Image (cartoon, one colour):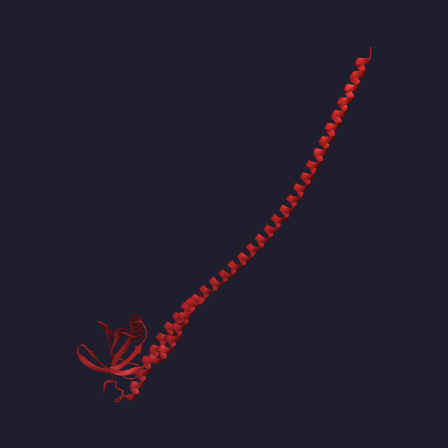
Length: 236
């Protein structure tokens, strides 16, 4: 029972860690936004797209506030400062997409004098890559924390069930002991009943002998009485 509940969960946790190590990769890709092709960065995650988009939007809102504009799943931010990337304001266009393997986050960054590019702006590229990876790490950690809590809860349930099974076994053992004791008591009662039956049978035999003796006494008394009457009749 415990293996059926916990073993798959452990496999999920292991696969999550492995998946994180394999999929938190950032690549350069082009995407058409409102018909205009733009080069940018994309990070892939093996996580639910709705959860990723909600977390991404929340982070952007917390960091850039009212400068975040959302239109049909496309996020635009004008004049925002990403400290790790640039000390001057930049323009960001971002999009979250559900894919067969999970979710991707893509963004294109206008640095003012150039667009973010692996070859043209390697320093900024590395900083932006770190930003996306840090976000991915945060989501994977949150996801794994939820899975760990679920596994711990299942473990606790399995342990409680195991304790209940042991308690049931102890109850069975006590019932067996009670049954043995009851059997001994019944055997003792049977032995006592047998002794009482023997005693009663002996008492019946004695009573029969006593009845024979009483009948003999009655006969003797009748004979004596008849003898007395006969003597009386002979007295003139």
